[in-house]
Length: 133
Image 1 (cartoon, rainbow, N blue to C red):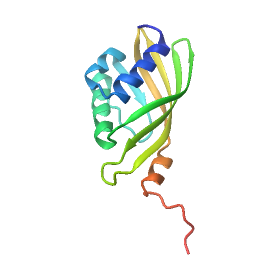
Image 2 (cartoon, rainbow, N blue to C red):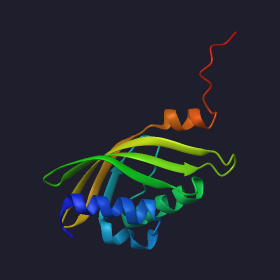
Image 3 (cartoon, rainbow, N blue to C red):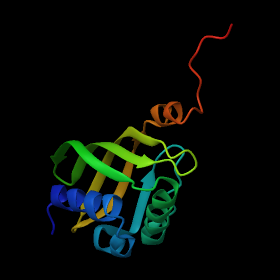
């Protein structure tokens, strides 16, 4: 599978939605790098594997639904709706992420993006938007 769109769609499904972290090396390059505020991806395949395992623990039932995908050459932009369950409260959560991925030789080599932590934290009650007084 060398088509960048197919690689990204498969990685979203296999690694992130199905949680098959044993297959990370099929989709991510050994020299993979990421740039996300507030999220430590580590580096290379071990970093992605560790993060994928962590999100499964932090948000059981973690799943990504592709809402929009735009591919141009080696670059793929994907807008995701992420869902899961907060383990302490049992609350179901839903928030968005926008990622830009670079795919070369059938593997994701770079990923950068923004996650809507504001919506996630608001749903978890971490942020209180009521006016004081």
